[in-house]
Image (cartoon, rainbow, N blue to C red):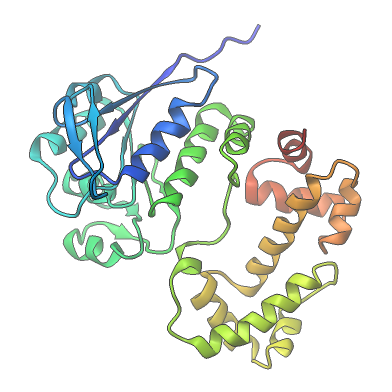
Length: 314
């Protein structure tokens, strides 16, 4: 008989002034998981009121920094830019030395960097703040495009919704992809978003955006066809090199990666209709065969089309 793993203790550290959205992502993802796999404590420098970045909104926490001493995982949501209190940085460093897993959402990465936990490591934060993180902490290898980065004991994520991506990833790492899929379903969110932050960064080249809009609209309407990168370039009246550069700038990925992403998004939609066979899903999305669909699906989502269908259909 399989023994269920012990409940994992998660401490969410609300530094003043905390980004309320980031904090609620962590508390909801783990605190409402529903299977008793996590016990969540929200803490701050001391128990009591904590200001947030939202005008007129504050919160009250029941625990102080001692909560970090008992946590298996410490989540640091975003907070108002500036030096985090030294007591908090010392507590984070101590939790790390004790072996706790430390993760940040958005500008929470600055606290991890200030505690010395990101030196020599890859890390990310919201793209707006990435340059400042790199400038203030030159020993950190800042990746401004990643949605989240796993460096083993230390993990970082980009802004706001990317914190949800990270939390679902941690659930999958702790309890398997089926648990993450179920949690994503309850939270009405994709299990995994392909690409990086670049797809959300406003582009200064409106002409390139207009050109790509025609290319992407045509491709999205013809996913059942065997579309090549050369086909996309001809449709956009660009060289393949220019197309690659424009896709990298606009979406943070190559044209081929973008095309696969669109095929997989379409596949997810079709899989939610239980009357459509896996073979038919593969054909309609241009992935050819069920075998090819399974390979791409597992590579992108770390699960199978059948498991996805089971999780996301009544």
